[in-house]
Structures are given as structure tokens and as C-alpha cells.
Image 1 (cartoon, rainbow, N blue to C red):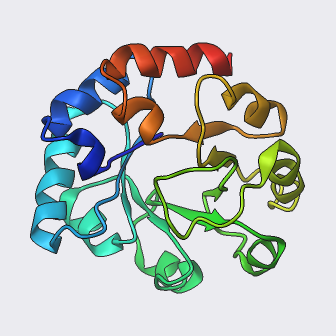
Image 2 (cartoon, rainbow, N blue to C red; image 1 turned 90 degrees about the vertical axis):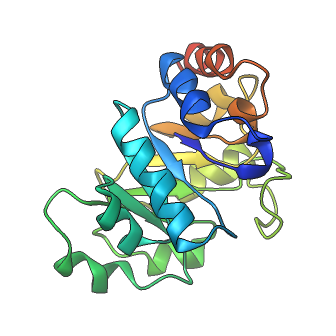
Length: 197
């Protein structure tokens, strides 16, 4: 999963960059734009949904995801509770959840479609991310996920360390800087895919 970041895009066209990432092997995109207006986030999401052949999720904003025809949304602990939202959403609408501690794992509803566990490693992309879990810490939290719930690693993941997260039980990884910070997002995504095999 490649997560958008307006700063790392550095004025580049988001659609063009994410098309390159998908060409390199990215299988999902998440729109995260913390200081974007709802109208800006909606426009970007709708454009990506129309342009990309992979599912697009929206960070925090279920309403925008629905309005844009996105595949789902990613929720944090400050968002409306997943178990309250789920009965009001269309069948097949994906809801992912951030999990960063045993306490959050214990509180996580069993109906999440996936857990995003992290930060796996130190990351400059999220100031409030918390202390890095490392592969062992990731594995410990991954074991707490309900049976059959995919877990993905996030936070400081690169082609160099991605394999350790997969070996620790991840189904996949979510990245920002490793792809968007690269001069060639397609080659960067391809390198990550190769590391995950």
C-alpha cells in the first residue's frame, strides 16, 4: 500500500506518481492528506479512483471515501468507532485500523478488514507515531489479531527491511517515503515487491 503525502510529492502530479507506483507493483493506495480541505481530499480521491486499477482507501474520512467511490477507509483511534460505522456501510466497503500497542489490540473490534501495525521502524513521516516496534514487536502484536485478519506493517519500511516484517507475520506493507520520496516511484515500488517475495 502506498500512502499519499503532499510534501513528498513536491508538486508532482499525484496521479502520475501513483500510476508509476502501481506499475511497479503497488496493490493499494491510501489517500492521506491531514491538512487538505474536504473538497481537496474528495477531488484527489475521485481522480485516483478513476485513474488507478487498484483499490483506493481514504485515511480517517469514511464520508469522503463513500462520496468518491473509494474501496474503503483507514481508521485511527480518534475516528468514529469502526463497530458503529460498519452496519451503515455498503457490503464490501473496507475498514482498516491502526494498531500500535497491546492495549489497542485488545480494544480493536473483530470486524476490521485489516490491521496496520506500527511504527515498525523509526519514521520521519508521522511525528506522533510512537517508539519503533521492530520486527519482534510487530510479531507480538500481529499474533493478537483475530484469526484471518490480515496485518500490514507500517513505519520506516524500505526495500532493505521490508522482508523482516513479512517474516514477522505481515501480509504486506504500507509505505510513504520509500516510494514517494524516490526519484522513480516505479523502480522503488518494484524494489519493494522484490524484497517481499
